[in-house]
Image (cartoon, rainbow, N blue to C red; front, side, top):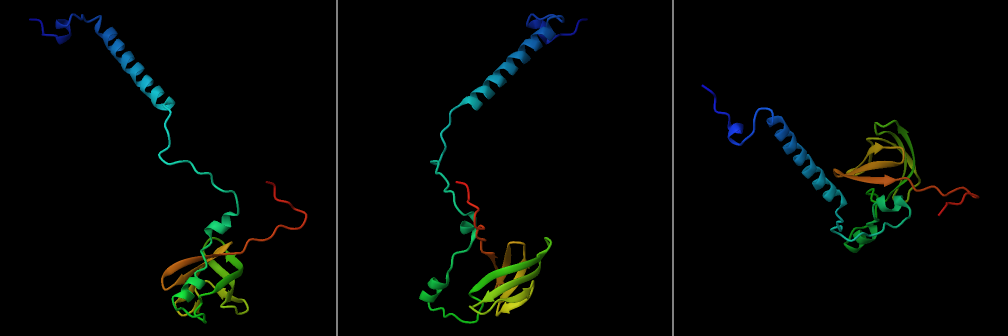
Length: 159
């Protein structure tokens, strides 16, 4: 008794079955490669218009805006609450956030503060980094960067 072989009903013999499978797989490969080629060569337009980025000082975009004039409009009075802190210098200890920062608070002469020190009511020096410090104001973190150094005389920045 001979088993029923479905490929024999289609007219394939045992010798032609591997050839038929090869033809089907080659066709699938050609279709896949054609789909990839069409995807990679399709000219797509961006969803948003492309805007050029202005070349300038990147530090200016990362520093927080001075909110003292706006706070004054809403009734805040300048005082010794640590609202005006300027970073003068840092001595950072590695990448741990430890170290000493030289801070001028509310127009006073600069003083040295260790990381973790309380500067004013609800104002703490959280971390000291190589080019900035992190200040905690009632739990909110503020980053204060060192001012950019001016280029020495005789050195011109290339355009």
